[in-house]
Amino acid sequence: MVGRPLAATVRTAAVVLSQLEIPIDVVRAAAEQTQNSFVLNAAPATALPADLLARCDVLVVNEHELAVGGGRRPRRRHRRDHAGA
Image (tube, rainbow, N blue to C red; front, side):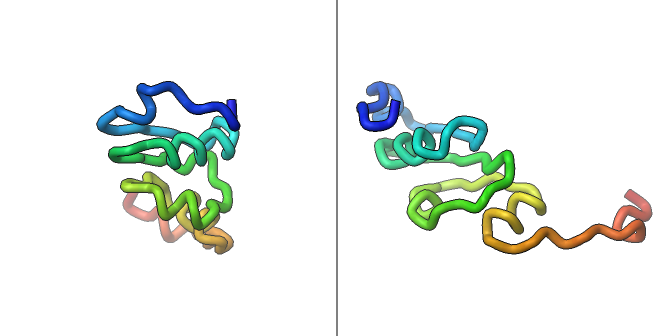
């Protein structure tokens, strides 16, 4: 799919939502061709290229995905972190 233009629907949609369960090259192509809002759900967690982050209008992440996507190791949770949860 990469190398070919994505459907006109992607280019003209009011909002395009993508996630990382599809190949990153396809996500990048969709982000590049989106003319309006691009939303990325960064799951599963992986390091994110700067050019892709720059094209995101909204980035949806949990704590683990934020750490991994930002190039950091996720912090280790301790039992006390869950107390009262």
